[in-house]
Image (tube, rainbow, N blue to C red; front, side, top):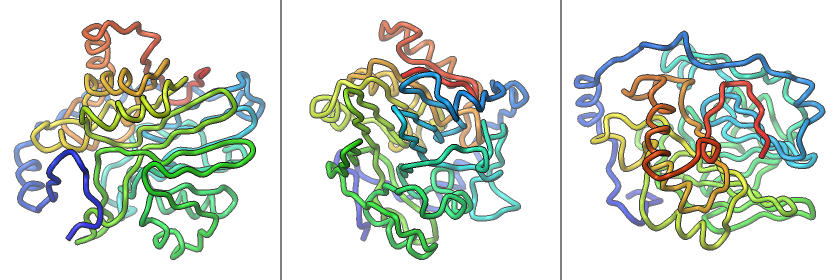
Length: 308
């Protein structure tokens, strides 16, 4: 029996049959790989932040959030592939905005769940015990096996607070799997960060339901900044329960009461069937449909810094 469940859907185990059905019916579209937007990073603007609160999109779901002297990484993946194998699996299409060695001192790392495009063993070992790792319930054992002990393991709606900052482990609609027969054995989560008068939300990876995000917004919003996935959504028959599309991302932006949102989880690895550059185009359509301004929900080139 699964250890963890999503409360608002009937969870679907990713069986071999369903996976093969997807692989044999999928539409390959590799156009645009060479056009993935990226800019050369200004490292000085990272080491000596130009804004009190700023975010750097490193790629996929990896962000460097810098809030008034505190450096936070989300789902750090710096490897060339998001796979258990170094020689196979989805390959990075654009380099990280900076290397692991170029990172400033990291104070905290937020992990949303254990999929390989969100939890990278090589990166974890490099960062080691220097930062404090905030992880969802059930992941502690994985980290301890890799000698990572500077951990805070939380369930949904639990928080970790210091004199300088507070983190909330919050709901998402997703699943977990890292090995054969370990489906749903560890929790998945989104995260909120409270620093002085600023509130940030990292959605992690999620499907949509009309309950959880409204509750997050009602209890903890409004948020000054949110990072919300916009890629990884096709085909819908296979992905919709656990991966939002750009229109659902806009709905979540509204429901959590986000003042500014950034689209993540696109343009880095070819994981699903939509063209690599489609998510920002679909986001533009969704913004217009829901009467948002372009500056309300943005996308960035890899390597660009955004004031938040």
